[in-house]
Image (cartoon, rainbow over all chains, first blue to last red; front, side, top):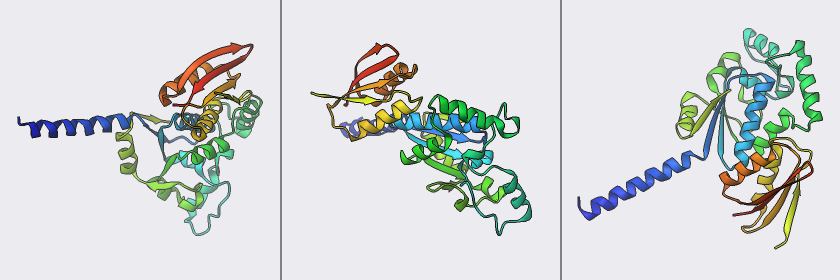
Length: 179
Length: 74
């Protein structure tokens, strides 16, 4: 190998190492669940990672979309079945059910009260903080289509994408969590 | 150099490290902070935060239920 070949090889390896190093700064999550407790876990982890200077991408799909809906939006112009689904699903983080001990909607109120007593931030404020810190939220286009959810129904700053958008982020991250 | 005290008592995870991160964003390199929290998980959290963000943890002391971390911004 000539000197220039070696120099080229070294440059190539340096670039590769830099790429691997930068992967450490990314965290990807899939928020599939629309349960209050699971969304809470997702956004606590997201905020922690953001505080540690990481880039965080959350791919929100299926029931997870309930957590990033606006508290109110009109369902005018949607198909009958879409309207039914939208009516039956909670609108926004304040309306979610807990995965255990829901007790017909009393559970989340009970936990919110207990968390408040321990000064734990509320889910809406954790979501807001993550947004301020620059979390990258990708809402799943396919789930949105199926359930008749429009981009305007979701909190501001959300990007809409598909599986490739999620995967390209995940491939560049050292860890990907499914919640 | 004068130390800036950051009092995050009464806050729960992940707020103390979030607030620390926000304060450090605005600070200059070499600034020294004393971060106070009474969250029992804070010692492990701030240690991990410093090691991950490369800010220097100069020491941790416990006074009663308070955990006080002295950190120099990198």
